[in-house]
Length: 136
Image (tube, rainbow, N blue to C red; front, top):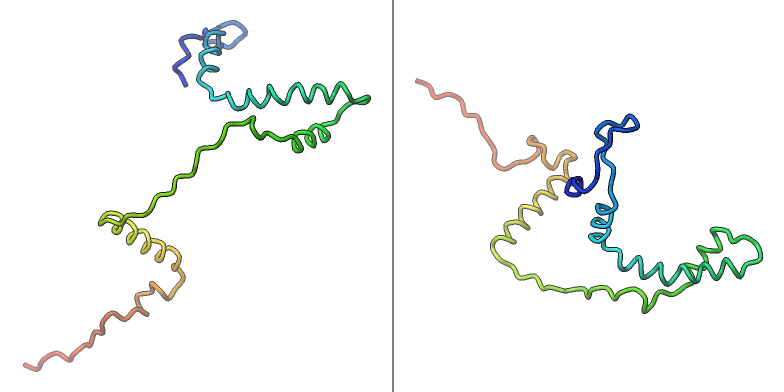
């Protein structure tokens, strides 16, 4: 984010001492890095059609009629085709098994915080019998 700061200028005028002001070269460099091709293609297609809609209308065109026009306009063939979905089969191994086991027990533990599932007094792993002390 600070990469283009050298292309801008620092102004002390107007009470903003040390305030950074972007330059035209900085803006051009940032614009070239933005992925705007799809949006620009869409605008090149829609703007002339909306301008024609406005010029054909005898009264002013409200926002709702422009939105209706955009909703009913098809973009098929205009926008790029999305990438295909890649389906991969799961191939088990020791590490994914360990991860899945830890994840599953974590989910079981977190979803069952309500007593008595993890209440130590209700879980019987073994019984302890207190025997009387031996007589000496």
